[in-house]
Length: 338
Image (cartoon, rainbow, N blue to C red; front, top):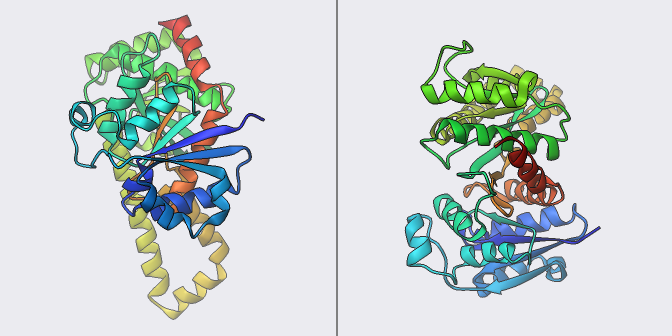
């Protein structure tokens, strides 16, 4: 098996909890992965201070030192023009563009990461804008949802491109041989929604035929009604953050209820295995990692506020992505349909 090179660009510095989360997450993930080597881009002294706690990692990573970085509050234009080409984020993406690595994972500034990725890697021919996609859990497994924040205003053609990319993602990453595609809307009826949604509906019907199931509503996201659900970045991001908040609220209510009485505590003890399984299913850390679909290279965005478990999951997701043929599949499908 070819060794996969994973770039951790800005993550060593810009997880909300600093390099401790990045290095501990890497240590946790790399023991479960074969033939993976990591490049950490950032301040070497800061990284070394944490790395001393994990000596087994020394043979499995390289540190590319740079003191320049993209602050979390920096505007995308500043990341390009003012901060420059020696930032940890720029260097990690450039390494991917030069085929020196297979995938970039960052917990840094999302807007800057997207802007630099588009500038350095460029989009696939036929794709106007890349989209942020992630896996959305449902009773049947996972659905692919995009866009989750990269594109606020999009055209019908861009929605169609998202549908094709999401379809390729479901084929290659989820190993779904017959994925169904849908558009998120305010109702299932064909006459509902904006002109862009109506136009995209007609075009996707022609492309996917019976694999296009039409419009779905917000509650369908978690039902598994469709394998691929496309929307604009504003709607997708609001839906994602709302779902994460509800999951945390349910966990909070459940914990409070079980701890509020002796009977509840006894029930919690008896059902601890089932409760552990439930906790894992609604834990947002389990699906940490937003993939930038549509670029000539693989870039994954981790949640900046995650802990080492979430970051470890993002690393495993990134490596699995690098071992798929997602880029070729997108190129082929776009060439056939656009």
